[in-house]
Length: 245
Image 1 (cartoon, rainbow, N blue to C red):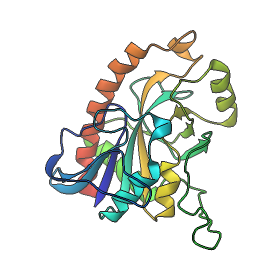
Image 2: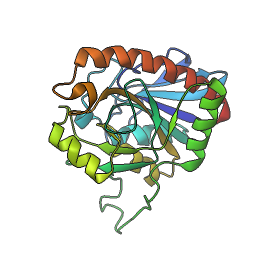
Image 3: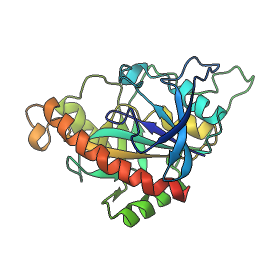
Image 4: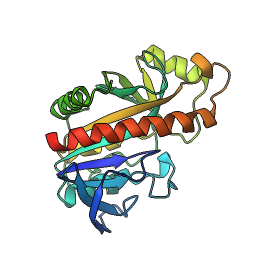
């Protein structure tokens, strides 16, 4: 069963025919929201709102460990996440991007299930942070839906909730990041630790600080407009991805 994690702008999935809801408890606390089980395009999926159904949980307070654990516990065999991001390079507001790499700039988050309680040191390979098979399904679904989905990009994950300075974005671009967002980690690595294929569809909602029309300031009102249109495309894309899972 495919799990979908919705971010800003996708706290509810309108194309999901909900069959039932479950409150799940985990060893790591409560997930961000109840899990919604149902069908998308006739295929069973489970949906979780990363920031809560009312979008009340900021990115640095999301209980990523509980979220991913709950999805695995309730039968998810893969996770497709949706995230809104700023565009640093090679993309513009409104674009959908399927990154293939990431750089983690976060700090202070509970970032692993292997914190020593197992009585041994556990390492996971993270060379390719996003599952190639799930990414291929996303690209094929985009082609079938005739939606442009940019193949490849480097997601720079930051703490938030504030937006970045122009100098920080310049440093990130120097590191190779092409996108900046606040929820990409540790979600991706936690899925890897639980052996869950994971990929993320990014909606570019603004030029990052110091870039394009964000050269002097970022328009939050403009983000809201782009986000609404972008999530409409995401819903269409999910309708084509779900049957491929």
